[in-house]
Image 1 (cartoon, rainbow, N blue to C red):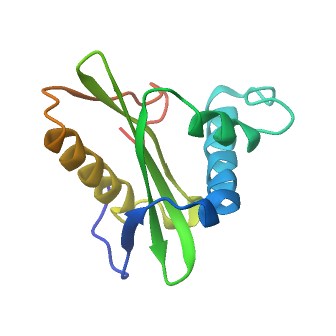
Image 2 (image 1 turned 180 degrees about the horizontal axis):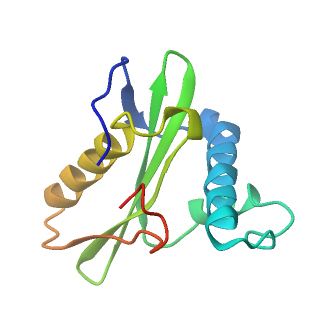
Amino acid sequence: MGGLINVAVNIREYTQADLEACRNLWRSLVQRHRDIYSDPSIGGADPGSEFDQHLSHPALVKLWVAAIDSELVGLCGLLVEHGESELEPIVVSPSHRTKGIGASLAQQAIAESRRLGMKFSNILQVARNVEAI
C-alpha cells in the first residue's frame, strides 16, 4: 500500500471547516477516474459538489482527513450498512501519493469498523487504478 510516511501526518476527524479542502480532494479523485477511463464526463461539470452529496449519504458513519501542517492531503470515509463496512472514498492528493497516507487513513477506518463490531470491511478500488491496488 505505498511507501512509508516520511513526513508528519495528522489523521483526524473531518470538521465543517474542512469542506472546501475536501471538495478539492474529491475533484482530484474524479480527475483520477477521468484519466483512468479516458472519460472527461465522469463527475459532471462540478465534481466537487459530489462531495456534498457524499456527506449526506445515509450510511456514512465517519470521515477522517490527513493533514500535513495545515494542508489537507487525504480523506477517508466509512460507510456502514447491512452489518458490513466500506471505506469510501480513500483519496490522497496527487503530490502526496505513495507515502503511506492512504494506508494510514484506511487503518483508522478499519479500526473504527472493528470498534463498531463489523466483521467485514470492503475497499472497492477502481479496477484500473493499479497504483491504489
